[in-house]
Length: 245
Image (cartoon, rainbow, N blue to C red):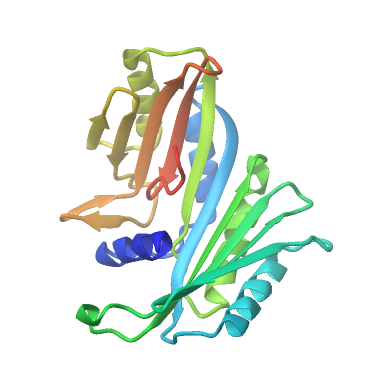
């Protein structure tokens, strides 16, 4: 039910449209300006695609049709499914020949009676890769996969990078502030604990945003160091970080 919970969260905040396809260059420049070495990217999207409680056979067809958008030669995929009385989930995963990894989830649910809504089927897609030059193409394919399935694109883009060496909190803060400056973010909210610093704000350079508690946000930065490999890791997400960090 984790996917369903995430979907409900995004329904509670203001909807946002598909992000501009020139955005990835802006994000890449913001990170590399601070000498961060980009190690990976993640593009995710989700949407309600119909108001039915679907059968597994139809859900599998949707997942396979979406997969063909990313298939480059004849890659094989694995497909799993699970269910109970209230939901059914189909998960398709595959490593592509171009090095990217795609995960497609089709989930159909019967909402609790207190929601007073008909059943819904969600499509969630994520693509992960290490070659940031492929980011633009993956964003276009992910957005098309959602819209061609009857949904409304809500792309989140995440870049993960690192700097060699363990930076102290002051140095970490400087890195994050420099990224925020590159994105022209003036008002920043900062949260931190013993392991992580987290920053959120609104960039006028990025056309869309989420509205939470009356304020707009479209950038999320997280910074922490690692004892295991002597690195400091930096994550940049638009509009939020949708990956584990």
